[in-house]
Length: 254
Image (cartoon, rainbow, N blue to C red; front, side):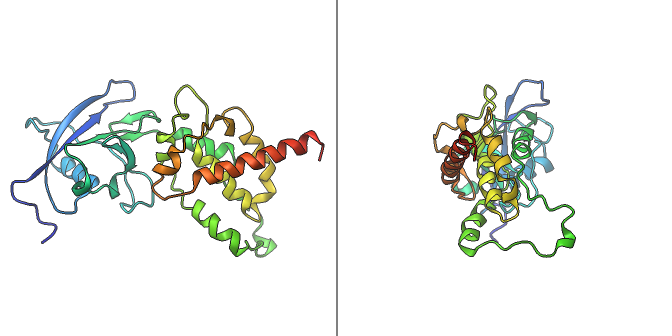
C-alpha cells in the first residue's frame, strides 16, 4: 500500500505566494499528509483540495501550472529548495525539509507559482525557431537528415521550453535583453535541419544583434541545470563559431 497516507506523518511546505502581478510576495506555510513517493505536485494538489495553512486558517489554494506530470511539457517549473527544476519529478522523499517553493524570479509572476514566459517565447520568435514548410506539401518529401547529424540534433530537440536554463543563467535578468541559452541552442538545431538551413543566415543575424550571443557570460549554469541534459554550452560554442564565420564572410563580401 505504497500510496496510503502514513499515519500522523506530515510534510511542511513554505510557499512564496503573490496574489497579483502588482502585489508584494509573501510566504505561507502548509502541512501536507505524507505519502511514500509523493512529489511536489501531489502536495500542491493536497493543498488545493484542503486550502488550510499550517496555522489552521482557511486560505486560497496555491496556483501553479502543470500538464503532463512526467517531465515532458516543462510547465511546472519552479524553484524548489533554491534550485529551479520540475515539480513533477521533485520527490518529497529526496528533498530537504521543510520544502521551500517559490516561482522562478527571471519571469514576471502572474500569481503564486504561475509565471509569464513571454520573454522566452519572444526569443524563440526572434531567432525563427521553426522549419518554414507552409505551402510545400505538394513538393514531395523533404531532404533527409544524415544519421550522424540526427543523433546530436535529437538531443537538442528535447528542449521543453521550461525556462530552467534562463532562471539559472546570471545574464538573464530584468537589466539585460539576453535571449538566453534555450534560443541559442534552438538556432543550432534548426540551422542543422536540411530545410531549416535555408534560413540559417537570418537566424545567425538575429544572434549577432543586441541581446544575442554576446550576452552569454559562459557561467555554464544552464547546462548543469537543464532537466533534459541538453548540451547547451556545446551549442553556444557552435553558435559562437558560426556567427564569427558569418561575420567574416560579410566583411569579405562572400
